[in-house]
Each structure stands twice: as C-alpha cells, then as structure tokens.
Image (cartoon, rainbow, N blue to C red; front, side, top):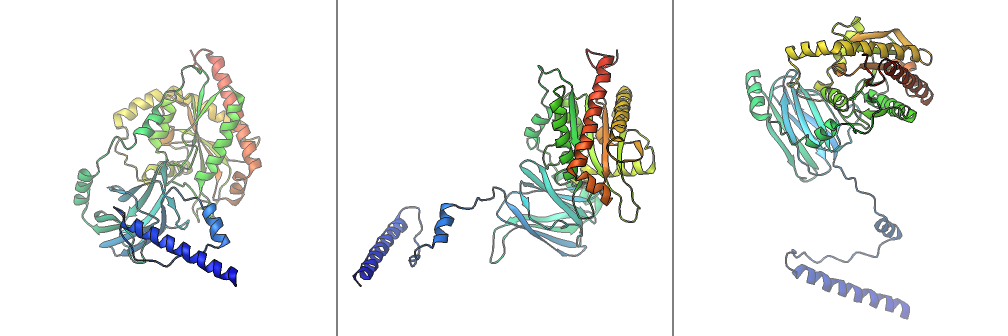
Length: 442
C-alpha cells in the first residue's frame, strides 16, 4: 500500500512540475498561450521505440490523387498534394497542351492514371524531367485560358491541392496569350546547360562513345502488355553496355541519362557534340499497337531523309514526338537553310554510321534474334549530329511477349551487350587503322 501511495505522489509532483513549465512557456514572448491540456499518460514500449527510431521523412512532396470535373466549356483539375509547393503553368500549341512544372515530387498515382480525360482534358502524363524537377503535361481538346492556377492549403478534410481552372477560348486568343505569358527564364536550366556543354578532359585522348537510353522521366516510351515501360528496359541495357565498354580501357563512355530523367532530343544530340563524341548509340524498343499484327527481333537504324520502309517511317514519326510528349517547345529547331548545311556535313558522317551499323548487325546476329530486314534507315532527329557517326538500335518489340521476356532477361542482356561492345571495338580498330592520328580517313 505504501509503495502504491508513493507512486501516486511522485506522479502528482511530476504533473505539477510539468504544468508549471507549460505555464512559463505560454507566458514567454513570441509564444501563444494555449488552454491547459491533460498530461499524456506514460508512453508504451512501442511509442518509445518509435521515438527512438523515427521513420525517415520523404524529402520530396507527393502527388497523391487527381480529380477532373466540368465539361467542354469549363474544366477543373485538382491534384492532391502531401504538402505545399510552387508550380509554373504554361501552354503550348500544335498540339494544344498545358504544362505544369513542379519541383521534384513523388507521383503516387495509379500507373495508368491520365490515359483518359474529361471535358477539356483529353489525357495527361507525368514524371521526372530532370533531377530536382517534375512535370505534368495535359493534352487539351482545344485552346484554353487558364483562369486559375493555385496551390490551396488544407481545408477541412481536404489535403493541400493544386487547382487548375480552364475555360475554352478561340485559337487567336490562345496564341496571343502564349506570346504574352510564355517567358523563358535563362537561369532555369543554367546548371543543366553547364553540365551538358562541359568540354571533355583535354588530357584523355581516348575516343568518346555516347550511349543514349531513349525516353526517360515523363516520357515512358512504348509499353509492354503488362504496363512495363520502354524507358526502364533501355536504361538497364545501356548501363550494362557502358560497364563493358569501359572495362576495355580504350574508350570513355558518356551517357545522355543514367537515371529516370527526361532529356530533350536536341539536348541528346548536343551532349554528343559537346563531348566531342566519335560514336553515338541510341537505344530503344519498338511496339506495335493492338490490331497492327505482331513483329519481333532487333533492328539497327541509320539516318535517312527517306525511310527505308513504312515501318521505319512510322517508328521515326513516333520517336520524333518525344519532345511533344514532354511538352517541350520546339520553336528553336533549325530552319530549312540550317537543315541543308547539316545535310552537307553529314555525308561523311553517314558513311561512318552505315559502317558501324553493318558491324552491329553482324555481331548481333550471332547472339540475338534480328528483325527482317535488320538494317533500316529513317529520319530520326536524335541521329542528326552532323559530325558524330550515329545509329539507333531497337532492341526488340515490347509488344511481343517473347521479345519482352528476352529483353528483361539478364542472360539476353549479357549476350546482346557483348555483341554491341565487340562491334564498338571493331569499328574503332578500323577507323584507327585508317588514320591513327585522328581516327578519320586522310
């Protein structure tokens, strides 16, 4: 009985001491006094462990939900957020798009969220654009005016929300708004531009090979039947290929991306030129839409103004839309005169590209299944570096179950990357034999 009474007394003394401390804190300058609150009972063992080993806090905000409402005249889009953030909203024409740039966020939306729209929104997509920045691109049914774009603080049972209110307008008013509102801030991409344009080390004479895993970030590329994205398949392949080429010790390997980020087509070409690359290899997977039949096997493409067949033309048109998919403004593309000059400079480069492409096909046919015919040409924008021999390798068709199973197999990747790495080595052996000093024919 005495022990029990002692415990009660000790507890009461502690409660009085805490109450006195709370009262002093409430009276301190800059702290708002609060109503007295009953003391919290002693923590359980589980609570004590939770306090001792707290769960790591996610450093990035999350987009946790989305709702669309309205009609073809006025549409409201609401994205639920885990906490507040800043958003930049702008529009683009041909096709009509609304772009929302965010700091880096975690998208906790269903995998197929955005495939269908409502009202003025036909569909939308989302993803990482670059380290530190994410993007949402909404495909519009027509020209719109953004009547409201704001981040609202939590209210009632509503979380933090990014709210976009859109109204249908005429094309002329839409283009006028773009001219007034879409100001490009040169500082926004300054750090990325410095990294992209950095010259290669002057004390390393080894040839530079640039590997270009297609798509990335917001641009997922083609999808397998179960939903797996092309961007992941080609990045895994590129990282393994990079390691094998680097282990030879004869070449320096640069990547247009080494993580799940978006890189514009023009930037991919610029990376190759800024690094003074002597070979550029773009890696992709193809896919046929349901009802278009079936196809399988790897294909190697070189640049041509005229596609070698209808399938090559279809693929080039699809791949060349990558910047539109990510909402990038293409207004800075070369004009017709620049294209003519580029074409003249590309004649020698195309000969080197064709030579390497034939070597890749010869090596790949010993290890993997090839498409028929395996060597094709088309007008891929990513191959248009006038002074860098370039090829685009379609590893296979993600729409074909057998191809997809192989491309995601470690054994298949090991065999295919061995073949491409051997083709790279054989190509440079030929070039150096032609001109040991520069690698170019004299």
